[in-house]
Structures are given as C-alpha cells and as structure tokens.
Image (cartoon, rainbow, N blue to C red):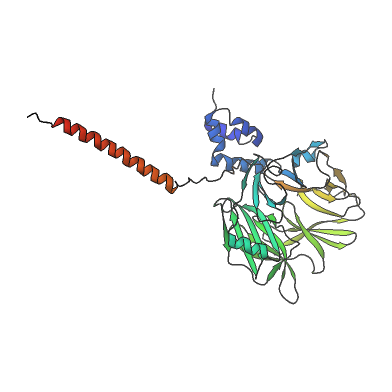
Length: 395
C-alpha cells in the first residue's frame, strides 16, 4: 500500500542528503518532490532543528567533511575528502566563508568567486564584477571580503570592501545573480587589512575596524545582509589588547590578557544592554598542553563542553570541559596536518544557473527570412499554375 503524499513528505525530509539524491531515481513523483523548492526549504529547516551541524575542514588546496555528532564519539572518524571543484575547476583558491549550507571560495590575487554546496557537490561560478569595480579593487590599497546567508530574503551574498578614495562596497546576490554597489557607507571608519575575511554570524558579516579619529578606538564593523546596512559595535577589549576574531557558533573575540590567560568574549544575541559577555577563559598551563593559539568552533548541546581548534605543531580539534578543565581528543583519519574548521548545514539547495536563450545572429535571421520568401514564392507559383489551367478556353 502506497503512503499518502503528506506522510511521504514528512518521512523524506528527515533523510540525509546523500540518500535523498539516490531516492530521486525511485520514480518521477519522488524526483519532483525532492527537487521542489518547498521540500528543499522544509528539509533544511528539519536538519537545522534536529541534526548536529556538519564540520568543514579546509586545508591547503584540500577540503574534508565530517560532522559534529561523529566528533563527539570516542571512535576514530574518517574525513571525507571533496576533490571537486577545487582541484579541477577552481584551483589555487582561498576559503572565504560558510553561510548556512553553502561555502564560498576566492581565487588568489583575483576577484573571482565560486559558491559550492558540499552536500550535493554542485557549484556555481560567480559572474565577474563590472569592469569599473574590478579596476578600483585592483588599485585599492586594501580589500576585505565576506560570505553569508541572508535569512530575511532567503539569499546568499558575497560582500567586497575596498579602500579606494574612501570605502567602496559591492554585494553579489545569488538570487539575482548580479553585483550591486552599496552607496550608504561609513566615511570615518577604516577596516583592518588583517581582518580580510568577514566573520558571519546571525545574518551579518563582521570585520575589525577603527575610527578615523585621534583616539582611533577599536570597533567591530557589521554589515546586515538583509537590509544591506552597516552597523557599529563597541569592542569588548581595550585598545592595546591583543585580540582576533573566531567564527564559532556566534561572533567571538579572543583577548590575550596576559601570557598565561586568554579570555573568550561572545556577542550577546538577546538584545541586552551590553553587546558582549565573557563566556570563559583559558589559562596556561592547562589540559590543552602547549599551543600557539586556539579558536572556539561550537558548544555541545549541554553547553558544558566547547570544541576548540588548537594550533600546535599540527592543528587539532579538542573537546574542552569548561567545568572540569579536562580535554578529550578527536581522532579524524586522513586529514592534513594544518587545517581550519568551520560549521555548515547540510542542504539540497540547487545551484543551477538561469540559462538565457541565445538571440539568433543577423546571418541566421537573414537566411530564415530568405527561406520564408522562397517558400511563399513557390506557393504563389502553384496557385498561378492552377488558375491558368482552370480558366483556359478552347477557341
């Protein structure tokens, strides 16, 4: 007995993407359902609510895939390498960012971008920006970029910032497949070149910046992807603090207070008076051992443990118990010695381009018109022959 369509929809939206791609071959009805926009949105919503996020490991010209749930287990995990399109279609590319279910890469020393869905292995090359913008970015003293998900308009966007006679900002929209310039930009802010890649969190991109004022106070410059507007956040640390961004589950700043202590600040997303709060601190010596730096990736469901990317002789992912101050190592087989970890959500989102019909050339148009005239002339000749025979008189 066949299941009702409503029940089939509820069952399939809980199936992982790799199995859904196989299910498309079961029947035309299943293929049509799985490819529908409504089902893709429902599947992503169900995945976000019920499943742990995936983890992308980006190395030098390499990309590996695992998930947070597997890293929580005590067993060894196999890192799944994604060879295409980085090695065959888009070599020598830098990782720009992860927004919801898509990844973005940029060609080194070039303004060429590629957007990639690691779950479906599909990608789209971003069209080149208009030549007037490309010229400005080529001559700019510093450039910054970022990639994220616009939940207001259900869109994915690439943001480019250049220091060229002031701040020049352009935005690429995946939905409209074009670049646009943002004219309402701050005139008294300088984005740090070291903050090249914007950190995506809660529908906005963030960069470290400073006011063009005598005191030169540090700020966090945000860009809301929905309304496409800039906003300023005060920095949680002093001007002379040694700090940097860390794109964990939310916006995060690490402050090197002393040689032996690092404070971790998280952005408060609940509209409190203070936009930042100190989540925890790590002191040396500690269970992490000797390390150059660390970066929070994600908290466990209980909130008692945090997954840290620790920079030692080789990069490691460690679970750090915030209460007991203990560490549990993760074992991932087949990954490079140096990598950077990022969260993403598995999705069926398609990256097919809108193919425009090619206009016929002038030569083809002329040939078509000439063929039409010959056909009409032939039909006219037939009519004339018929009439001449039908009305012929005998004398």
